[in-house]
Each structure stands twice: as C-alpha cells, then as structure tokens.
Amino acid sequence: MDIKVISVEKTIDSGLVCSAHWNASESVDGVLVSFNTITHLPPKDPADPDFIPFENLSLDVVVDWIKAELGAEGLTKVENRLKGMAELKKEAQTEDALPAAKAV
Image (tube, rainbow, N blue to C red; front, side, top):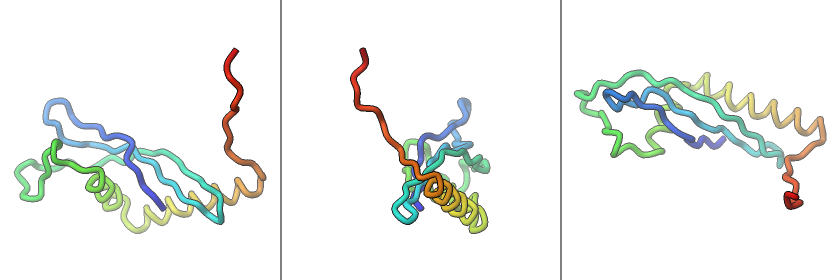
C-alpha cells in the first residue's frame, strides 16, 4: 500500500497542522485501486522537544503521523478497503480510461 499526502490543513493563528488529506493506492493482482481521505491529527505543543516547525516539515513525516494516528487496525482497514475495491473492479470487468478525442 502506498500513502501519498495531497495537502495538510494548518491553523491560521498558530500554523499547527491539524489534518492531512491523503491518497491510499495499491495494485492488487494487477488492478490499481485508490481512494482519497482525510485524517485529523492530534494537536502538538510547540514546546515539545520533537516538535517540527511547518517550514521544516517533510511529506514523509506527515505520512508517519497518518500511520501513527490510524494505528495497525486502521491501516489494516485501509488495506482491506483497497482489496475490496480491486475485487469489485475485477468482477465488473472494467478499467479506467480517458477519451483521447480533442474538444470541438
């Protein structure tokens, strides 16, 4: 399973990150599936020794926060959702595509 951060929300007054919008994706038996969701993050005290200022924040750290907030059970639910989506897609015998014709 791959998790990619789409964006984060931060408070205007303090600049603290309060939630992360992210995408989960996985290829299951050759079928690519994904969905977008949001995870609300617990408040962080800037006085904490492990506090990371927004300007120093990396996407990898945000992914770690998402995983920590979801925990093992939440991550398993995400993986099961992706597997279920892949099964439905295989049963429906459809694929994602974009039309190639130019607009008139």
